[in-house]
Length: 144
Image (cartoon, rainbow, N blue to C red):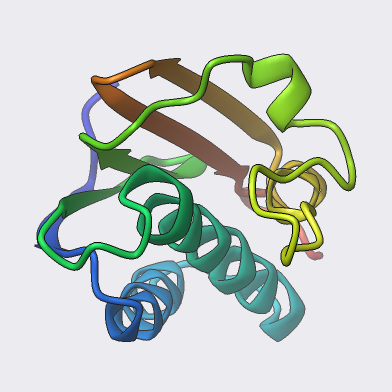
C-alpha cells in the first residue's frame, strides 16, 4: 500500500528537539479524524522514542543525528525513529517496566510507547543504533 503522505526530518540529538518532534508528530496526526486524546498519546509516544535516542542512544551528546519518518496510510499512521547511537544490548530487558540504563530515570518510555500505540517494533544493534517503529491504526468510516 502506498503512503498518502510522508514526512522525513532529521535533527541533532539536542534535548530541545524532542519538543519539535512532538509537535511535528501531532501536526501530522491531525490530518486524520483522531480524538485529542489519541493525538496526545501519539505525542507522548514519539517524544519518548526521541528522548530515548537523545539520552540513551547518544548519552546526551548533541552531535548525534536522529531521523523521524512519519507516514500516513488509509488505515494507519506510522512513526519511525532512528538513531545511530550506542544501541540496546537486550531489547527484551529494555522494554521491561522500570528498567533503565540510567538510574535517575523511571524506565517507562517503552511502556508508554506500547500502551499508546497499536504496534511497537524495536530493532537495535550495539554500536550501530536503534530503530523504533510505532503504528497507530485509524478507524475508517466509523466513530471513535
